[in-house]
Amino acid sequence: MNGTEDPINPYYGGQVTLFGFGDRGDVLSSVASAEHFAHKAGYQGAPSETKHFLNDHADDPTATKYYAWRDGAHAEVILYTITDGGHTIPQGYFRPPRILGATSKEINGPAEIWAFFSRQIN
Image (cartoon, rainbow, N blue to C red; front, side, top):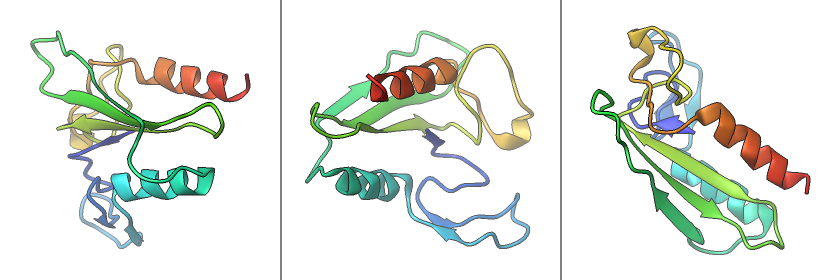
């Protein structure tokens, strides 16, 4: 999961900083990172599934979609993109400081993470 407006770990890749201070190194874009892990898992090409979530929270400026590589023969790889989201886990229960960016209410991030890892052990 990564927000496109993450002020610490840039969604589109580049230098990681703590609010513009200090160089923590460079990272790939979130898409390139997901593609890297998908290739390592044995997938070739584009994700097998793309899903856009329906945001029914009027006070939530974010939008969520995911790209999934899954076929039953390989480990799943999923990238959740939180458009206009910050450096937070999407959920509707807790609001971290706004300095980290917007927190999406659209999905329950901890529940999605739990479901993902639960599927991997079956």
